[in-house]
Image 1 (spheres, rainbow, N blue to C red):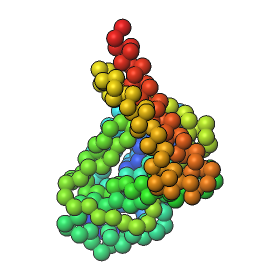
Image 2 (image 1 turned 60 degrees about the vertical axis):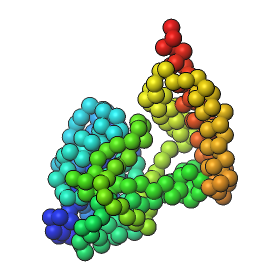
Image 3 (image 1 turned 45 degrees about the vertical axis):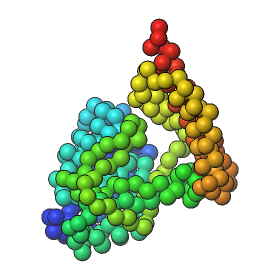
Image 4 (image 1 turned 30 degrees about the horizontal axis):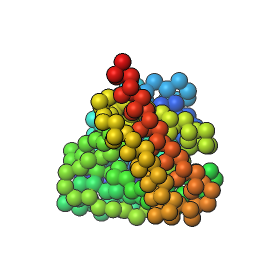
Length: 261
């Protein structure tokens, strides 16, 4: 049952989707307490939209504009004072819901415009509590008129004016289904990242990225941040992160070569 809140403390949950029938119900079940739920779908070919309509009438079809552009569309459709972004493969934990609802019921502080909270990832049958994946804090709850969608594709982020505070409970992230899904996503994301760089990028920067950034990414993830404590999944995450860095720079080099022809 939704609790009544004053207008200035109401929350719009915004979600973008694209063929998410395996994830979206779990996500939506975790946000039924929100004052409104807005879903922007990029013409899914599965049952995503029909599932969404069981939870909200505020579902819109829009051509894909990239992660930043698509979330900006969702935000523009929100009507509440506060916006909470949740991805289709994420779940608002009960503890995080309680923290957010307590804030809303007591009244959000006038001098705070955004809240970040940790994201806890489920991968290969376990919660990942170390390495680059945790706490992986995300700013997702913010005043609609004080925040905007920014970042660099495919990694969007919310940029706010004014003060931000932190919540302690996690947002659950049910990431890759398996290692093949992880590799496919890394391939897709590295292509998007490479496309965002200048085709005249100096060669020495590309070489430095492969020789320095890639091994450092592994060392940071696995050793400095304790990824080894997550067992074999922690090793896989660190190796994949290093590999993704190499592939991103390799694709940049490939585009520079194409540009010379």
